[in-house]
Image (cartoon, rainbow, N blue to C red; front, side):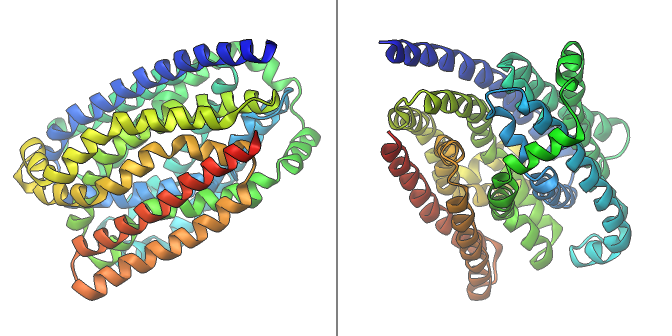
Length: 425
């Protein structure tokens, strides 16, 4: 009876916490989507292309900046999580400083190869984006540990509002260039960091009292599976998601990168909403249920099916009429981006419902499988893009082959997570 009562309690708290996160993320995404038609009429596709490339590379580097120790912040039963938080911040800062030197050495080469040779100094946004993004993520996991989902939700809204206002304001008052698109992204990420720090002030004595070099080393060793398996896994997964933008910067023009970048941003919005709304809450819930020997399979099934019901209609509409929708909403100059959206929609629908499955792998610490899966996944996706390009010489064919591969791999990934959840009970 005690376990049944616990499960019932967890369900009500889970729904409440997810609703809190979901509300914030929906508002944040609404702000982004409402601002997008204005931004696309101020900035050129080439500007979007440069922004998309630098932001994508920054997203990949942000994955490895703290060696994924931030995911372990939730797992300890005691206050080891604070040491993991401190470790994450220290590693992110160290990595970002290293990145500054790499940009100094190679900025001309990178800018030349990727089609923006006269604007190589934009690459200095990279270390800033990486450090602030990593810090925001670590703070978000810390507040998840506190179960303060309201602040996390508000922080997500602040990111979108500041990001959008900065880009629109700069476009009208200063100049519509890739610099201001990147600056808007940076200010958007900085906003939730400042918000988290304001609310963290009261807890700083509690957080810092047990932090020491010895404890950092002990925590790093105890949770070494995260840098060993989860870090390369998520690094490869991030490369996989950002692969078209990175490769298109080399194969095609920044205008094509801009089209793909807009399509990816619009479709990834719903995916990120559910991922950010559910992943932290679901991970915290599954961790508790696993510690009490409760059934993980039923919760995985209900959550995944719920996401499928929510996502099937909007993703189907985009698959059928993406080009027309994009042309109407963002301007006819951007209708080609809608064609990419049509091709990407089936893959991103599966990514949309895969967030609960991903947390199963973390809770059950099946990190080695995730690593092997993602190595195969990225190898196939690279091959798909190159094959599509070699056969048809068009970006649409490359994206089509990429999306088909993503569909096949996600079906297997979700199915295997269900199998693991069933065996764990």
